[in-house]
Length: 215
Image 1 (cartoon, rainbow, N blue to C red):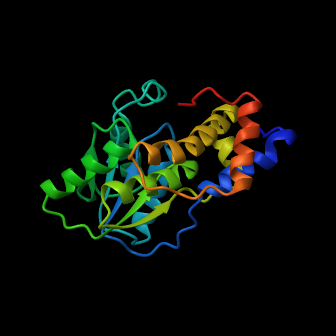
Image 2 (cartoon, rainbow, N blue to C red):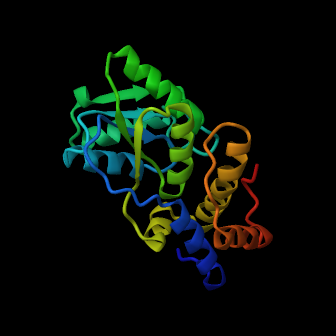
């Protein structure tokens, strides 16, 4: 399961763009954003065990792309995986209703407030190519909190192998690049600069047929 040589450079360009390269430091809470990628929960457990936060919230209901894999909901399955990896139950909160990144942020914020948990800083744990969009969304909806982003530290080829679907990864990279501009225009996220090399790589991949998930 490898990237085609004629697409590799452009896919790598988008992959690198979405990696925020944040240097992590201890925060008040880790937030695992639901998706098809169980590696999010794996990374959350690793960071918890490393002392990066004292509690973790897993947030996510289902999308058409995840309901078959996670029939009880993304956050529920993430919690179960984290428990298997040694995160204690009393360190986990579950937010099972969010169906998009904006709801991940707003419903998690409400859940933490309902438990009387004061939050000044968070680590958003996501798929690698979701980092930039998650950051921009959180800064729009929760501007007073200090936000850092994290994902499993896998090279692109290793990540593609872990997912087992080259086209799915490329299509998600393409649509997440589109969302950077589209969501800012709609008021869902703060604007982010898109360098010309990223815009050009995006355009070439769209012309190559990776339009499956475009808005």
